Image (cartoon, rainbow, N blue to C red; front, side):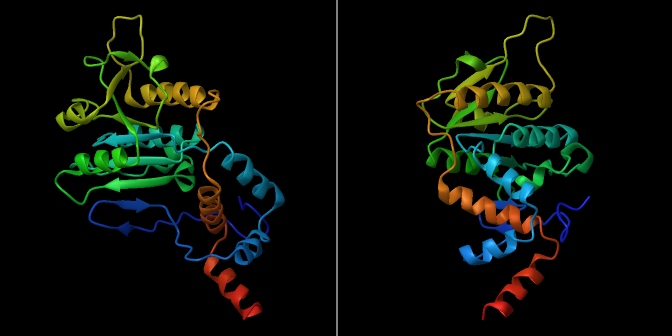
Length: 254
């Protein structure tokens, strides 16, 4: 169903490659002026623009999720969907042999609103990803039922958190074990030792995101610059063949 009277949603995949990072799902909007953004948003329904602003107010990068070599496409896509549902903007996908495969029936369009970073250019992708996150000030928190020493609801929130989920059968890699700052667990009372990875992710992401948003000492919201960047990206994604709208703008405003 079209999002407005002029356009329909489109899934734009633009790969921006470097030695370390491949970002997915990020339409380019170099130097989009406020005038151009206002013009493009004029083709969106008011309800859609209001929804943008409401969601932007709840978006966060204080918490991010890292998927390390997840082999089951359903699990990886389900985690991505959970991230979007809980307002977590960034997800990092490490491909050490297991290639991420989008599953539209599982994603339900959630990927269109996320900033997805893929690490698959090197033999040490996990190290590259974790180093990049540490440089940004993230606490590397791994999920491991055997190494865990902190319950998810007791994890300190004194700095941004990167939650790392390992491969379904073997768990996190040795690199993650060496680089992790903390290991967390979901307390359970049954005989079974572990949950399905997508279920565990949803529980932890909900718990952590709720605690973050209810803690008055944490600056968890996006900056105005980050909001504006996403506002532009989301606007472009809601305009089918957006290049025609941009061309028309410059014709009308030489």
